[in-house]
Image (cartoon, rainbow, N blue to C red; front, side, top):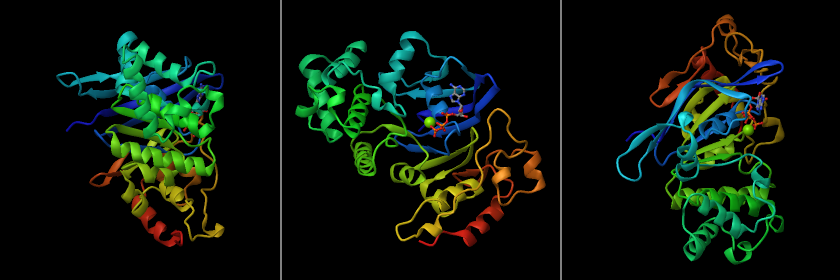
Length: 340
Ligand SMILES: Nc1ncnc2c1ncn2[C@@H]1O[C@H](COP(=O)(O)OP(=O)(O)OP(=O)(O)O)[C@@H](O)[C@H]1O
Ligand SMILES: [Mg+2]
């Protein structure tokens, strides 16, 4: 079966006073139908930019400089392909809710403060010629239950009457209203306390089980991503530097950056001393270093790394990495392994 989404050689820049911010650089990957893919990476690596690009919600200062985002529609008759970056007007509006829905980072204020939850559902449904009245209520009730909210309590409430975790669950339910085939969740739990975060993760796992949508899950937290997704794309300085199944990512990571991220994941038994974080900070995306963008922080840096940027290559079937030294990186992992 063909992937539901194929990102092909996508590059996105922002025009800033300081120059061009190269936020996404020649990124390609697929999301299979029913699959959940995580985009992980540090703050500023370009994750949100990629999500916004797919649904054409980038700010005016951003520009897609190359590439395509091919979405394969499977409903209503013959399958068809669309490049989401080329959609306009009505086709774009339909794509955004009916095919692909995005829950934004810091979405807690995304609900209209003067509308009851019932009206937020009604507005969205009406704008897309979807169910109304009792049928809409029934559908919303079903979705609210799926995200473990009490529909009777929530339906007539205003957003400010709900906690952050409840609002986030309302947003997730609302995003599913038009039965999108692809859901993009951008850091859906980041603004929440740890128990609420746990609760939302359980809701999301449950939803994946019960509904069949494909998922692009954006997070800086590798451990959370591993819970929910099938494959992980590790993003560094606007580029995918490693792409592998969750299992391979944890057991046999090949990129020094991914290895650093894994070593930074605290284990249950681990003490604080086990937490080795990656020294240094991500590069300035306006003036990036030559060669591999990770080389100033890389323990395995060699002269080649400072001159030539490695492209993604296959380490084994289904596992790609962009590192000149991935073989020695693996050995290094064995010696630095977190004691679990
Ligand atoms: N409107 C903008 N104008 C200029 N530069 C921007 C703009 N939005 C984002 N950037 C820059 O683009 C880069 C990628 O930002 P983006 O928000 O996509 O990263 P992110 O991986 O989502 O980070 P975070 O984990 O903090 O959400 C960053 O260097 C950021 O400073
Ligand atoms: Mg972001």
